[in-house]
Image (cartoon, rainbow, N blue to C red):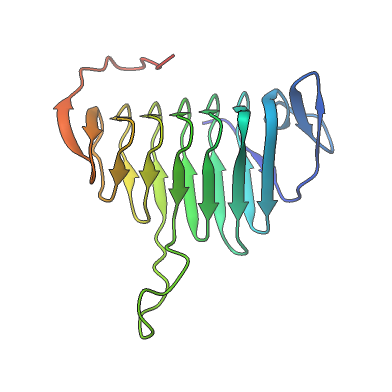
Length: 186
């Protein structure tokens, strides 16, 4: 696996729709395409691979990494408009992942449900070549397996194995997918 760029500050600049982290130019910190507004609040560790596309029109994309949290976005990943990613512990998004518009990926419920209960936080892992449809919600503690598809409007509350189509509220497996080895979703 190739190295993934490491973003420790919210400093970047854009040139003709492509953006590059400030500092030394390496393959791991350039050729990310951004269209529209992207709000990044990074107080933890934010790693991003190369050739990541953020299409934030007509609504902005919001990425928040809390102190002591980690967010990793793999190579060739596409994130559509209105997506909200909130990392309080750990979120890993693999390579060649497609994330549809208005999707929420949050690894915490952010508030106590009852006074005696702690805030619920658990890592999220989205494996390589996953397609997440429009207006999905990925909740804390979920792993989505390689090559799987999450249908639009689904709420993922439990692990989804690799090579399946999952849909619904809560998301359940609808069918097995036949995916050839090394096939990349376009």
